[in-house]
Length: 73
Image (tube, rainbow, N blue to C red; front, top):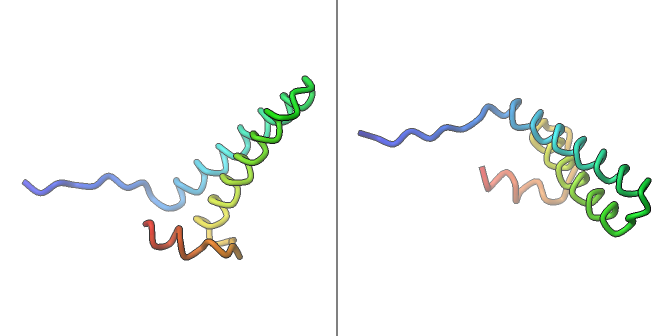
């Protein structure tokens, strides 16, 4: 019996990445308001990663790393 890979559709992956970016941004804002600047900065870095990923998956990217993600799929 052949193995079947369960791959999410591209649109679903892009939406999930946008959702993760939004959550990390919210966490970063909350940390900044609490005065935890180191944690806030880390959250903002993660938010940017997920936003870049969402843009790449949705075709809105002009990122230099586009080839890396394209080859990973």
